[in-house]
Length: 220
Image (cartoon, rainbow, N blue to C red; front, side, top):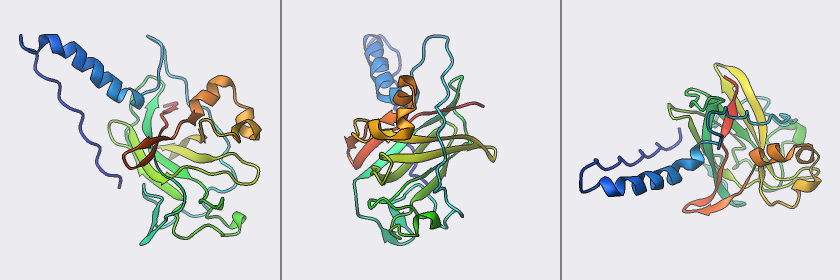
């Protein structure tokens, strides 16, 4: 299971001594948590995350180790590539957290190989390659994995699937902002500017590797 999400700080009580400071504190708290939810206009509904193809390398069978940490497979530690956290929220189009939704990701290893017989079974056994988590009441999910890399014919990407009540609600792909391979990728090129913005995110330095924040919106 992923590590527990730290509780948000409790705002100070509104007294005559703190009244003047509460407005600034509220603005700071909003900025600190704004990444959790996609932007939307006042009174509008959220646009569903664009769907993308599942591709040929979804696991034939879910591996025994399929937790949030793709850099550990059983007792093995994968030490290639750039470690990264991928996290976000799963919301419906009204902006409500989808508690109980299951998020899955899968991707190739640093050498561009998937754990799949269709890829010749060449993936590094230390790389888990597939992860699955169930979101809590706040809709948040989090994975430890690699910044994705290109392989023949594809720009770097991570496959993402959301299931609700055992049913598939969304299958899509996460792309790396600024990657030069995006403009040559046949799937990325087919996206509208708005859909590219929804699926293409930066990987920025964090305290424990890179961080990519990928909010997901599904039809309830």
